[in-house]
Image 1 (cartoon, helix red, strand yellow):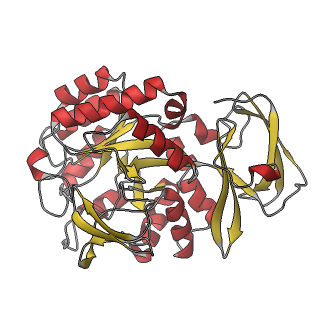
Image 2 (spheres, helix red, strand yellow):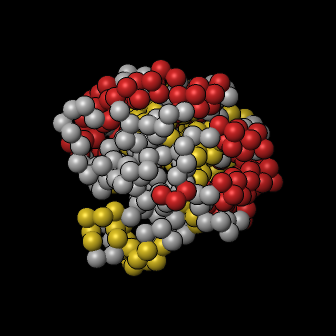
Length: 391
């Protein structure tokens, strides 16, 4: 993956001044101010997506998932500026979860690029709420109470590759599971829950640090107060991920979450396998017949009000957050890069610092939208449209 010494340049995404960055063996050696050759090219930290169910027809929850498909998905996402992501395994039978986790583990062991891009797995389920609404599209038959024995044995078998687990703290044994997970350096996130205020408080006290796609995976109707959305917003030690595709949450909700959580609001894609594909009608294993519009909305066939998942990459979410007036572009980029890296304690948390990985996106601005022109992972240019121009 790594190249010898060379330099890249661009307009810094925050202060809008020219920078020249020297790179050696995939890491930053020096950064200095510079007059750049092309002032239309900006440089920023590349994206880190904590929740990816699939992309471009590849489904990480398809039991026939192959190592070759995982490599393809890695390359597809690199083309979208995503240089690190967590394949997300959702609720399934223990047998199928085990098979999928091991398939991803084998791909990481065998392929250097996959190993460099996938720092871990996100297990979303099966320890979720049984209730309609919070359960979302997760199969009720496979929902289980938190099972430390199963989880620990599985994670040990893949050398701790599962770095993140989403669960509902409404189960009686949730606190004990959370404590043990935290002791084993697994980040615990609250999601798909109908937990009480006390259960959420105790989950945070036990070590939960995140809310998964806050505002989604909920009941259609909630009491004014108390409810689990207010409770999670009120917990200062809980960060929150949001699906910022413009369909899952209205701008008003995103603005409230941003005002409360600030740098602890992070963007995820939560993309499904249809993400990245052309508009049209599709057949899916979970949602049945679905429609993907040219605007990027994915819904159950014949019912535009019922979403069938997220069909966009995190790049779309960055632009949407800006176009909805929630935050600035530089802050939106941080919410999809440095801030998730900080949460997961990845070396990319030190972006634009000497010694940090040379993971960048190069972009220009067209009609007030970020248009990606290149991606760099560990000092290697990948899928770049302007490579011939020296980027």
